[in-house]
Image 1 (cartoon, each protein chain N blue to C red):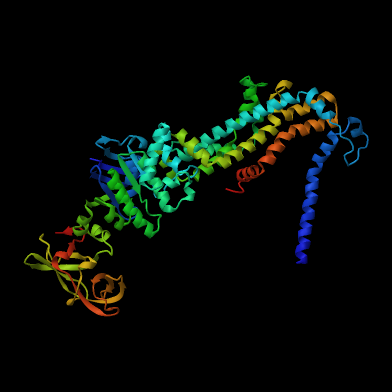
Image 2: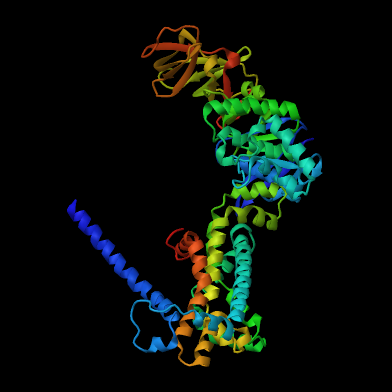
Length: 357
Length: 274
């Protein structure tokens, strides 16, 4: 196993910010920790790096317990959000810093830095200082500095946050290529679920220091365990509407939304739910269908993106529902329409936010 | 427009007057040092009227000025190097390493900065005497090594180095010494030069402590040595002025070369600029 966490915890004073987190990240995979700010994802990454002490539990890298091992002896390299390049050194010396500290032979240093520079297309910039480079180039130097150490695990702490949108997309692709090329285990922290979805083999969704769900990106998207994951993964986000269980109809649970537009939905849920129980139903924007017989909503604004448009609609009680619409370009702004969804696309969550399956 | 020119003229005129007041003693010392002793005491004029380098030759060859030079350079270099080294290491520890009592230690450094050195002279003298260090290099140098302001300035600068930069170096395998000398020192090279120059000038000009602790003429530094010239030759103004000018020369040269850095250091250590 590349990285294993066994009931890892972290206390800051009396506050426990990481709560008994366990996970297994297979060797060579690309894992992403994602969650809102303050969820503990960066702290967890820093604990794996050894930059934060671990209060409880064990961290294993390549099956070796490194919980009490110095950061430099753990076989990890980290790329920081701010790049953390040494401003007084050239690109070459930045990348060679760890090798120089390890007293590596000159010829070896030349070879290793040269190879990393070639992979990252930095060969022409080796004599420059970081201040003479663009944001994307600086980020590549930071990655180069990590590659040169030939680590077992690469750690990325929101490395693309300081780049503009276009460059972020380009760097995302570069990271995927890099991962395929060098095949090392990579752990990546981000608050951006699009980055998580596009990069990861396995996503860990964190909230309040607890892993809410772990799995392949599409598994989390299609089959979320709870309301938080369902709402966090996917853009635009899933809409939630309060409803009441009113009975069962063959394989489906029948639910009625509350308020003036009371409307019945059917959800493919096998588990039992008491009639009269309060729940939330969740439907992704692309799963809504426009149907005159459906739940009436008022279209406020539609975002036309060419191939697809997003209708920002509201119920009478002001709940906002985003509906994806494909093909048709006829403007619906200000109009009232009806929407509905097929039972297999209607997810149901209990009052605690847990999914009813 | 005219008012502005008038204002500017007044300011310039005032500046010139102040500059003349400041420069006159130096000018007078130079003119006096180039006169013969007789002319100095017989109603000399304001303008230079003699070019007699005899006083300089006398000062250099008939006094122990050269020995005092060597002593001053030696003391100043040793104190500067040691002060910079220990201040830098102390500030690095206070700024970057988490250890119990760190805040308390910093408060002690701050407190020692608030006590005037003159207030400590008697106890320091007794301490040095008990260590049998009176009239030794150790006696001159040791008490001058405690310069809390250098630690405080260094700490301020080290605090502003981004935390991630140190963490990157830790992950790169750097120990604290490697991080200090390969990362923090080069990143703060400017303030290091500035602090070194100010320390050097301070030690070069130090009079009070070396005057107390040294009685042997062979071990005197220049400021203390000058007083001996006075004693040995009676009130020989011209000779005294030439010795004083020779004593000041290295500091003046250092100041002229590193003017910008010295100004910067004085401003930072007096809290004008952070």
